[in-house]
Image (tube, rainbow, N blue to C red; front, side, top):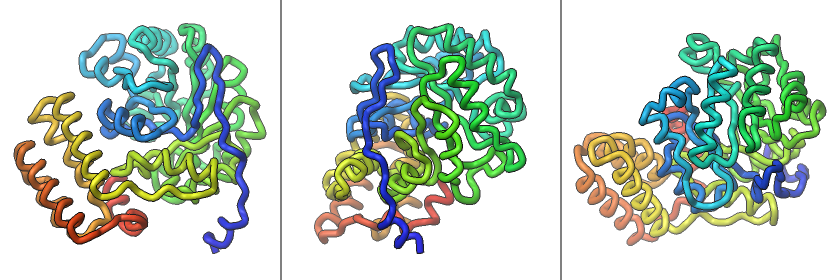
Length: 360
């Protein structure tokens, strides 16, 4: 039934988004901020392959103010052109304002405020993230203080609400627009859903009806068809892609091409995928050092192999290898055998639901 509906859906043309202050998102197909995933090497890889904008991992405002070295590293700008954003989380307006100033001083073109993180440590322990959807007075104070603190555009990412009895994203979006927020991204789930169930793109249309600022749809966008459906049902101006980019940093470019031209770009050849993986891997080693780089890159190397013949054994071996040369040798051997036999991965990614569940 879903595939029949997709053929009948029309979506608005994918245009650029002008946020003011000289900040323009030419291609609003955005890599979502994901803790432990969208570090600098991953953002650089996605940007180089065609992501219209990348956003840092969520950064705690208090850690930014204390100038924690790891936190400052997380906020480093990718340097690959276009728009780069730093996402901040916190519950104190003054701290959020100070952290935003520091991020802008480091080169951020845009500050994104997180009202969507559902994890207990943030939403309950720190009264930040999605917890702020429960207190619109506090939310307004944070948004207003951050907007006033910096000369660059400030945007907001949130969920539909805390739970299905409190779906206040439209009213919070109106508050955001009133205090000067330039764009809103809505993940079509509540905090209580975490990442279960299905993202409700139709609900996001209520936010579209509530405000005139640009709107981005987020949640469960794993394919070009998903992106088209999300735009059509939400009336959004663009899409933000998270888990769909695991092992596929080229997906945003494919989505943008499909939304603009109605035709599909094939996945890169396996030779090209191998080269992308190795470039990304070397970037992680350079960024984090050999020991930490090997450990942090394991999930990425595993995701790249998803859907390929023999990938389960490959992933199991990657997690056991202690050093970078061994991993690089394994990658060459795995991909070269598949390339020699003419294997492709087009369409294989969608079938590997186990890996998606594990990653979530």
